[in-house]
Amino acid sequence: MGGGLRYIGVAERRARLGLRHRLAGAARAAGPVEVAESLVALHGTDPATVYLAVGARLAEPSRTVVVTERALYEDRALVRMHGMRHTVFVFPTELTAVVHASTGLAVAARERATLVKHMATAGAPDAAWLAEVEKSTLAALARRGPATAAELAEDEPRLRERFVYGAGKSYEGVHTVSTRLLRVLGVEGKVVRGRPLGSWTSSQFRWEVAPDHPELDVSGAQAELLRRWLAVCGPATEADLKWWTGWKVTEVRRALAAIGARAVSLDEGTGYVVDGDVGPVAGPTEPWAALLPALDPTAMGWQRREWYLAPELWPSLFDRSGNVGPTVWWDGRVVGGWAQRPDGEIVWRLLDSEGVGRDAETAIAAEAGRLRGWVGATRVTPRFRTPLERELSA
Image 1: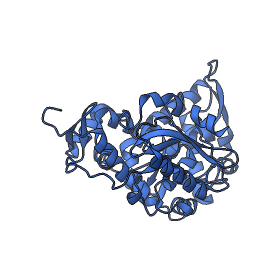
Image 2: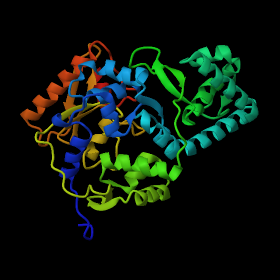
Image 3: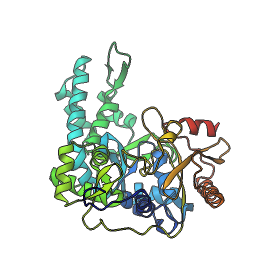
């Protein structure tokens, strides 16, 4: 297949996934930083996803919450910030400069222009006024340390200003300057989300001044980000890369050339791996089971997912916007979904039982027990509800 290119089939792709995504038993990690470094990024839109994704990959998950909070808020080894596709992720701190230059700058310019346009349309103050508020807000944050938007508005009352967005449209709404401005500052890499106001499942955060990082060349940063991701998720197609990064196809091709990526043949066409990764990869010594959370970076890692997720499972496991819910995995493929009931019980259902025998069901049940063990009394409801998750959790 592939005109002389080495063919990498489904079985090998699943083997790579199990090992490199820290899901096979022997490949599990010692701590959250190791997990984040292995995956490049953890989805952070839903705060609970970060902890659940880490816990699923730790050799010993009992202290998942404690060690992850320490990495995020004490050691600052992990940072929650905007990244690819204008989405909030958790990255290793060392990657913040790469993410900012490779994906943040272009998105930030659009975000600021959009905010100024919306304010002008609503008859709100202009860009010069916004710049004054921004400067004052950043100064207040530097003085206070971690703070909520309401606390910052005590120092800079103009943050409470409101304006109507989409007047006369079906999506009309009233926005505060604080909500939109802090979002823009986050995309621009000037502020990051800090410790939540509530538990580890809370979506209300304090804001902090972003850690200092060098300003990198955009092309070089894009090459580095793509190299790191392809080392973990390769082989991947050009379409996968464009989707995951949110870049233009010309940027993807330039980055592939810059890192000397090697072409291989996949069932869906030409794929790419990093240089030196063309050869066969031995799979895990034992089959593995995993319960991954909604928006997990493995389940959401590729645009084309048929090699690990059968299309007939999509209606049950995804919402209408394409967000994946909690998934059950067996040896490299999605075989069902799971949820947590009000009493804390972890329940799951097989949707694809092909090749899933008694040993597999025993292993999946053990993973459910492992998850229940460290989550404890905490109740976790995904931010984006999916049909199967709703049904199972009822």
